Length: 87
Image (cartoon, rainbow, N blue to C red; front, side, top):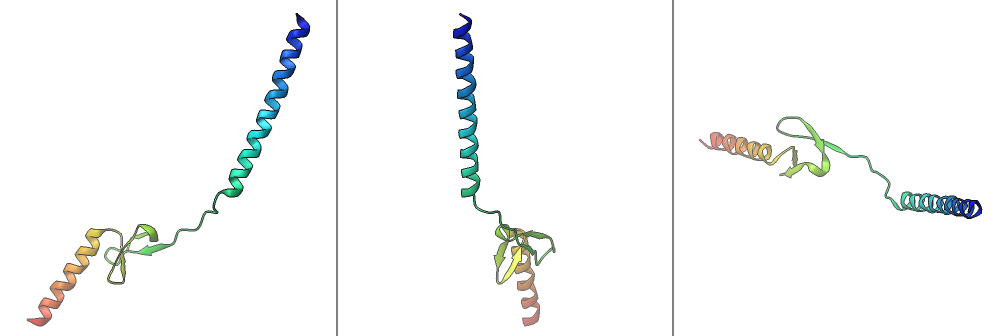
C-alpha cells in the first residue's frame, strides 16, 4: 500500500512540474506577441487649457477640445464675434 501511495505522489509531483513548465512557456509566448505599449500624446483644449489624450480629444476646425461642449462653446463665441463685427 505504501509503494502505491509513493508512486501516486511521485506521479502527481512530476505532472505538476510539467504543468507549471507548460504554463510558463505559454505566458512567455503571450508576452512576445503582445504589442509594445506606446506613449500617449496629449493635446491642450483650446477652450479651457486642460490636457487630454490625443485619442480622446475632439477635433473641430483645426483645434483640439476636451469635450463636445467646449468645441460648441468655442464655435458659439466665434459666431458672436463675427456677428458683432458685421453690425
